[in-house]
Image (cartoon, rainbow, N blue to C red; front, side, top):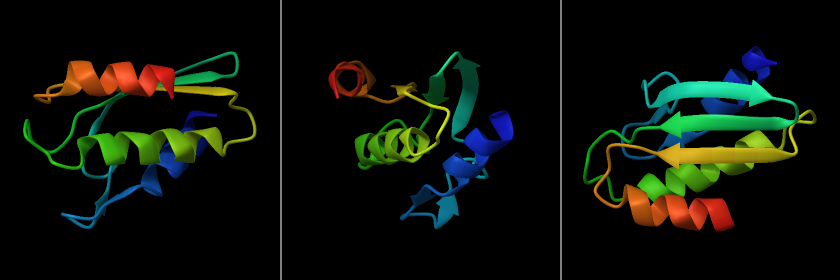
Length: 91
């Protein structure tokens, strides 16, 4: 399962650096429990202007996996992480 999660993460490309979020080292943690995947995501910079967009793209990619019903993405080390994480939990 983890390999399929990584494959999904590799489909999310950061348009500013043209590298996927996995290979760019932005994924700091992955947990898969039951039909839920939890991902900790650290953008390329504390001020990254597209951090929320990337987090939403990550969540969308993970939810396409057949064995996943719920995807939780947490943004860390970003100036707006708290606000963005509240949005991501509701979405």
